[in-house]
Image 1 (cartoon, one colour):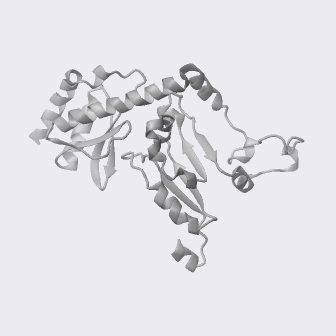
Image 2 (spheres, helix red, strand yellow):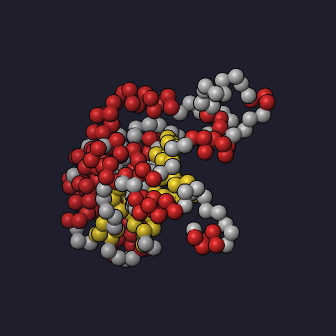
Image 3 (cartoon, one colour):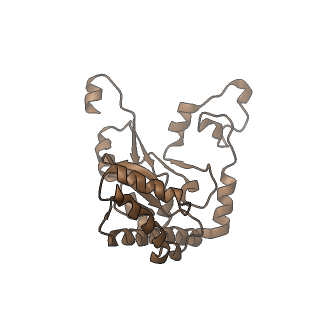
Amino acid sequence: MEEDEQQGLIPFFVSTTLGTTGSCAFDDLGEIGEALQRFPNVWLHVDAAYAGNAFICPELKYLLKGIQYADSFNTNPNKWLLTNFDCSTLWVRDRIRLTSALVVDPLYLQHGYTDSAIDYRHWGVPLSRRFRSLKLWFVLRSYGISGLQAYIRHHIDLAKRFEALVLKDSRFEVCNDVRLGLVCFRLKGTDRINEKLLSSINASGKLHMVPASVNDTYVIRFCAVAQNAKVEDIGEKKAHWWKKIHFSCFDQ
């Protein structure tokens, strides 16, 4: 950013991630935020689309270290907070800085309540907005904070149980620090054999996983997401079927 300024450019936006899609990794928000104090006009955004939902649990808020530096924070309740598809929440420290960049105010859209009402058409590109908040409201009213916290904690427990099963088998390795509901694992071997394993798992129809590239290595992502998932679904008895699947992968 200093080099950019020397070239006459103007740094204005930095985006950080708490819980990356590939491996649920966390940027060092505190270190980044502290460094940005030398650039007071730079907007610091925090993308916590998946992991941000977990911060309703007090014991997980340590992952928010450095959040005091953020200008905006986004999380998606449709990813891990029991809300149907297409629900994203955005917090901004200074809404005027946001709306002044997006305001569209021709005469035919002006009204007499400008000074007393929040006009959300100035918060994004589309002038009209869907009523997404209603479905989130129903979830909050139905489960309550304690119910949602229990749901998050249960999924984390399922992920830790799955991690333990993987670590018991010396042919496998876990490739991420399992803090929330995502376990990245792989067979100790080539990317090709892991691609074949994933194809076999998904072809079974018993569960679905997706891959990611972490440090240029092919990994398989297991994420506890089913609303009614139980401990029994992760237990060793239920795991026998996929042990049979991956045995065939060693033949080639």
